[in-house]
Image 1 (spheres, one colour):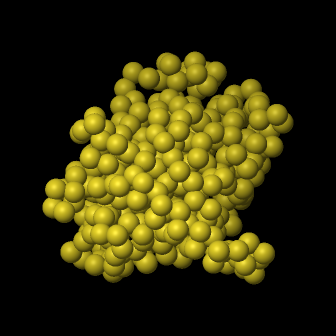
Image 2 (cartoon, helix red, strand yellow):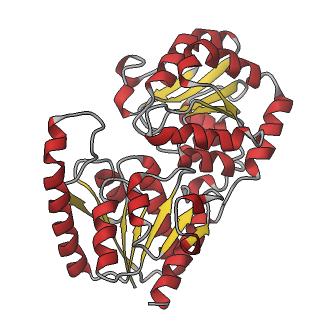
Amino acid sequence: MKVIISGGGTGGHIFPAIAIANALKAIDKSVEILFVGAEGRMEMEKVPAAGYKIEGLWISGLQRRLTIDNLSFPFKVISSIMRSKRIIKSFRPDAAVGTGGFASGPLLRVASRMGIPSLIQEQNSFPGITNKLLAKKVNRICVAYPGMEKYFPKDKIRVTGNPVRQDILSLQGKRDEAMKFFGLDPHKKTLLVIGGSLGARTINESIAACFEQLSRNNIQVIWQTGKNYTYTFPNGGGKEGAWVGAFITKMDLAYAASDIVVSRAGAISLSELAIVKMPSILVPSPNVAEDHQTKNAMALVKSDAAILVKDDESKEKLGKEIISLMNDKQRQNTLSENIGKLAFPNAAEKIANEVIQLIKNK
């Protein structure tokens, strides 16, 4: 059995793709998997680190404003379609899977045209343009939210949830190890700050502004700034009572160490927070298509499963909300219980089984 998987650009597309690959391997060790990503993007580093081979396409997104890069976009699309055809003819996959990102569009378009059983996985409550365009061509669409028949053919939809990193599925007994790993005090309350793999300017600036206030309230911080914002503290280091770095390699330990979290509202982040039942303050990014992060966050807020702070109010309100929630154990328990009800712990396995079923039905 051979499966080709395409997805990348951000951790929100890469980690589900790797989780699906791992689930396929768990079901059938002999399965051959090839990834296809966008040259120069983070998947070209993260996928090989996970033990899989990856091929790169010359592709990027279409900018919403007039730029020089947009002039090359049609040539990139043609190049990526031609390269996708060569990769598929060489690898000869039994199925193709797309988790979103620049490369998944050309790859899944070519695969479906060539009659290869194809599946896309949509992480958000509002789908991206790539998956909207692919929906009519693929055989199966795995989603994380109900009501997605507004955007996709109903008969193709399966509600599976979002795949998450396997190491976060069990946090029990990891707190002491986590405190040692991050160099923090096990007797203090701990805040986890994650703005996505690339970083979130507003969250970083808001945490920097209220850091001294948090320290005075005996709150220590595990702070992932994202690779674009390593300047928040000099040399990517930190202050006493904080671990600060561009990227957290051990997210299971980060969750195990923390009492509450501040996060953007990307779909994969929310799926992970549900799995680990983390009391959360969400600051949705306003710089995403159709404001889909706010839609993601509101789905949790309506279930009393998270607190929302608007991006443009973050610098003024975030510090107060953190301290208030950190000092209210009953509120934490309510949020934890309610967000846990929204978890899909076996999402990757469900999607892997859908892939295998498509191959059997070919």
